[in-house]
Image (cartoon, rainbow, N blue to C red; front, top):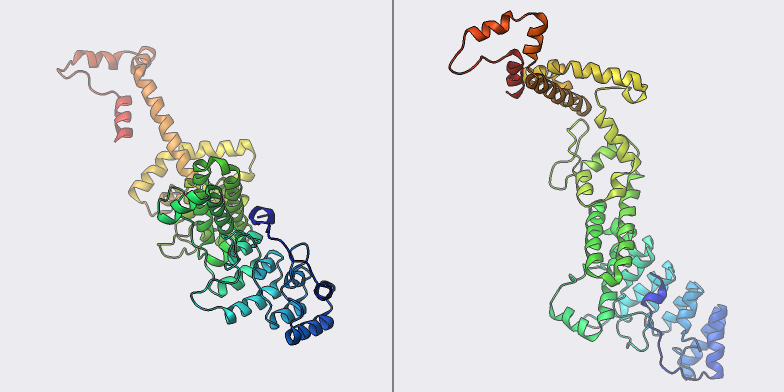
Amino acid sequence: MMEEENVVRPHQEIAALSLEEKKYLLAVERGDVASTRRILEKAEAEGHININCVDPLGRSALLMAIDNENLEMVELLINHRMDTKDALLHAISEEFVEAVEVLLDHEDSSHKNGDPHSWEALPPDTATFTPDISPLILAAHRDNYEIIKILLDRGATLPMPHDVRCGCDDCVTSRQEDSLRHSRSRINAYRALASPSLVALSSKDPILTAFELSWELRRLSFLEHEFKNEYQELRRQCQDFATALLDHTRSSHELEVLLNHDPTGPAFEHGDRMHLNRLKLAVKLRQKKFVSHPNVQQLLASIWYEGLPGFRRKNMALQALEIVRIGILFPVFSFSYILAPHSPIGQTMRKPFIKFICHSASYFTFLFLLMLASQRIETVIGGVWGVSEVSEHDEVPTKRGASPTLIEWLILAWVS
């Protein structure tokens, strides 16, 4: 998120600076640690300046040191008990990792249980960031892997926002006080949850988390029409993250493990039947980029053409001959699968492409038999080769009608 989206510019009046305070802020701005140390020591002894004073831009000495990424100056100011206020959020916003660690250590040592944190204790008219922005949310907005990891290791959490239709007291009160801020706080939370670094660090199954979050964001885009574009952008971000993980698969086995992963079942082993549970979930949740990824398509093609090595490299004429050959042999494959399903020929029928050809050949054969039966092909053949067989049938009438013809017996065999 851009800083302007979650920043509230303070409107409080800034007190005029004395000459000593100007020198103090100038020393901090220039990174003059020695001069700053002397001024701070003198201030502790005489109290002639306010070490928490701010310049005309509203920046304190600590914020200047963070902007300049001067770690030594940051440590010096903190050691002299300067008010940190929302300095931690500024350090995260500037992605100043070392300062974040120093400020977190200071917060841990000075914070008392039950009291608000330093960045939470600021009044709204002086706070730079909106109240819903926590250190972890801001770090996730910046997608800074290192800072997110530091915060998670220290126990920071980011719960799922309440449902958009939630009617709890907190949600009702928040909507009544400021409906825009309520909606923006939900967007801020989901923008943090959609951070690739946060998903990778906090989820045991990042792909599943990305899928579910993408589906939830799709739902929200229909419920909150005013922010549809933002939710759709976050949804694309989740889809891109899940798809990007496929680029890290180094072998077909790794890709098979990824696409066949089932959280409730045993781990997939090479040689097991591939159910492609994760791929089916991607189709169900409309993860088009994931399904259309080249690695996934290559694996699907290898599964589809299994049992026909080199088929895709043949020219069209040879491919057509191979299809005709399998189609003609479909009765052999079918009876082998029925009588001896574990035989080599019976196992061949389990190959997807061969099964498809055999099913298609069987279906076309059935249609051909129906066509012959509808045209009374026996009569036509009898007219060409003689009528002895037909007349014989006519001389032996039965109460149940004529006996089944050869074509009808074949149709009966196909149906059974």
